[in-house]
Structures are given as structure tokens and as C-alpha cells.
View 1: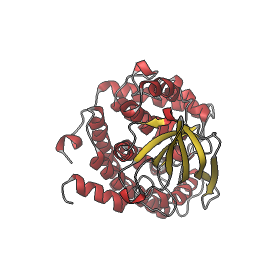
View 2 (view 1 turned 120 degrees about the vertical axis):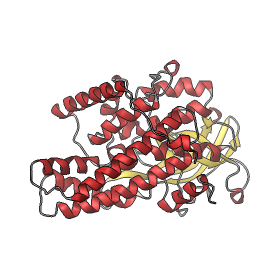
View 3 (view 1 turned 180 degrees about the horizontal axis):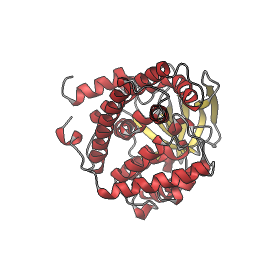
View 4 (view 1 turned 180 degrees about the vertical axis):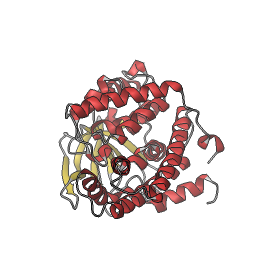
Length: 377
């Protein structure tokens, strides 16, 4: 991991104005009861209407060039908007995956036709995506892909199963990592990415319910699903390279340490009103969150420069989700005798907590990514 990737970022005064614009918009939305603040809003809070209202403000597809229907703004500006949405607990899952990682992948690897077709729709929050990486019985071994696409006249015939596909029951499309050549033993070779219509024949979406009865995960089964040739993203056989680059966007954002921001905000409100004593542990968590903010911002800087930030992103994700888990445990202890929105938020976060260090790669896998980035393995 090179020093420039984690270098300090000097705030631009314009970011303060942008941050205030987003705060004012969110305050108006809350006053109009257009959303209810929640935990994990980027994963579980699916609202097409809210995402499209953000798109109308120019806050979806911010880093997509204007020629493709985006707004041509920096990763820093997108970071500011993202932070404010997470802190507010806004329901942003509908556009999140398409905006966070599919759009950058299209810009880097897509054909001109794919860019012109999909990027304007993503920027308008009209084209929604799920991600098809993980598979049953594979754990964190992403390279053990058994989903296969074989070439046929005019495209590919896709067979296999993907799991933990957040939002697939709502989304229009899914970006699938599949084996298109070679054998299972080749592991990193012969993998490709395909853009698949989730309403196409041969696609079955099976809900996976959480212990609390919630539903945002799914299993997606492909049975002789035809994918047109233009659905191939990038070069055939280069899927592993593409997907690991994509993970830099997936792992580095503020959602990796602000999924439970609602708990922090409510805790601070209770402390301010004297309903909870200002325990030193709260200050420790605020310090950790500030450090993670700076780390995540430095990754945004690296991405803005077009640099590889895989190891730094893995570190943000690993430290961020561990911090969130610790925070939930501490909040549960501090709020044991309290009822109301704070206690409800803590209970919600407690249910979500087991997934923090699993989604986007387990901490054990990420430690290996960091070690390789530092030249230690």
C-alpha cells in the first residue's frame, strides 16, 4: 500500500456548502415524512421514489461524466453527499450498488454502447442493480465460481446460483461473475462479468429472510438464461481483474463505518439532554469514527486520481465494520434501561451486527488483502 493512497486530504470550502445543501434537503424530507431514519439504509432501505428525488438534485451519478448523463463531479463531492445520507439514516439502497460500483466498472470496462445505454439511467436512478458474486457453499472463496456461461449463437447461456444478492427482488439488472472458459480448477482464469436482466426467462429469485423477518438478501438461480452478447462487460476471461478493482469501490466508502450512524446521533442527543452520562467510551468511538472518515476520504482521493486502492479500501472496511460492531455492543449496554427511538435503533443494529464483518469480505480475508498490499505475503 503506497503512501499517496493514504495521504491526508485538505477539505475544500465548497464541500461545506454542498454538505449544508444536503442537510437542508434531508431536513425537508424528514419534515414531510418522506422517509423514516433507519439502520443500514444503504442495504435495507429500498425506495425508488427517494432515490429518484436525490437524482433530481444531482446527487446520484455524481462522478459519471456529463456526456453519459452524469454530473462530472469529484469523488470528494460524492463522499460528502454519501456521508450526509448515511448519517441521516436515509433509504438509499435503490441506487446504491449501481452508483457505487457498477457505474465505475462501466466507465472503465464498458463499450461505448453500454455506457450510453446504462449510465444515464443509473444517474437518473431508473436503472437499479444487484451484484452476483458470492455462491452457495463457497464461503469467502470468491474465486471458486461454479456459475457458468457458455457461448451460443448471439450471446451466452447462463447456469448457476448466486447468493446474498441484496435487493435482487427489486432491482432491474444484476452484474454476474461467471466462468466463461477454462475449468473450475483454473480459479482466477476464464472468469467474466455479465449484465443480466433479472426479469429474463430462466431467472428465479428466491428470498432469504433474516432472523428478524426482514428481506433484503436473495438467492438468484439461472437456468439456461440467455444473455445477449452485448451483456458481456469488459473482455472475456478478465472478470477476476475487473471484480477485484470493483471491490475497491465497494469496501472503501463511509457506509463501512456509518451504517449505524443513527445510533451515534441518538446517543449524542440523549447525552446532550442529560439522559445518558457522557461515558468516556463515547468519545473513544467518535475518535475512531473521525479516523475512519479520514482514511475513507483518502481512498476517495486515490480513486479520484485513478489509483489502485485495493489494500487501503480493505483496511477501511476491516476497521470500519469492527468499529460498528463494538459501537453496537457498547450502545446496548448504555441504553439498557431506555425506551423509545434510541433503544429501537440499538435493537435494529444488534440484529444487523453479525453481517457487518461478513459482507464485502470477511475480516480474515481482508487482513490477507492488506498484508499483500504491504508486501508481507
